[in-house]
Image 1 (tube, rainbow, N blue to C red):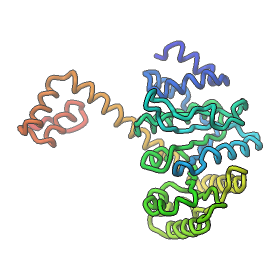
Image 2: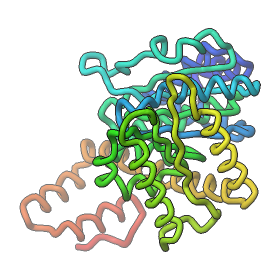
Image 3: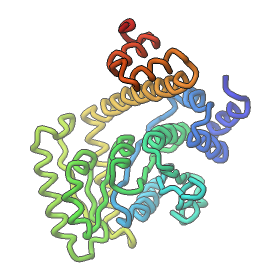
Image 4: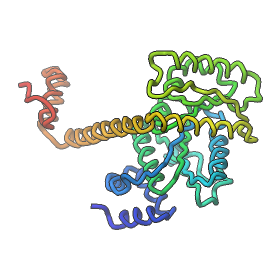
Length: 330
């Protein structure tokens, strides 16, 4: 049963209370015991929210691009939520970059809600919390949710799966790094952007990216649900150059997904994957608790550790105890 204070927060949030939303997000980030009930109560309230992911190496200008995109979306009267994934403070575990020092021009806009989330060194927990925060923002009525990640790496490749459209932001100096990131970039990118395109090396990088995008479209691994060749755009986000064209490409990608039916199919696949992830997470937590409390399981672990029982037989025994597999091996 939901604690009364949490239940009140949910009702206030659904009625448009920003402070209630912020407090619920804190509960989600901290993985409090109320999270399952919170998620049940907001289920089905996503409306027509569209999730846009912005990733790229540190220093590529992701925050500036998010800021400019937010301004353009607000000019179209869209309500916007921003989830900015920041590095963790080594002292507090919180986000090093705070809400108030990024996107200051939108800080007083009631139709823009910005939340910084710390990585806290945890890949799985962050992915789980990010997904739940997206749901809260959607239930709050945000039509667009922009996710800005720390930088290109395995963490980003996982988190960005939450996005309907993913923009990979690079700078001319990224040329050499692209060689080591090719596979991951082609898996996640729907749009490439070379920011700070007035710098030397921008044109060669764009040429390489266009070649990569063309090869990807022809490869057997290319998505088959839509006909889409990854566009490569140039921006100078500091003064807004090229950002309207970027938003136009995002809108075009959204339209292509919606017209083909791929958007709903991809969201269905994400929901299935989320269920599987939740099952694994819950099983792992239960197993951890059982390891500490159950003498028979502790004995099984000791038998494996001593070499008296092989791990496969031990797994069969444990699954049987959870009623998930065949009977005991002995």
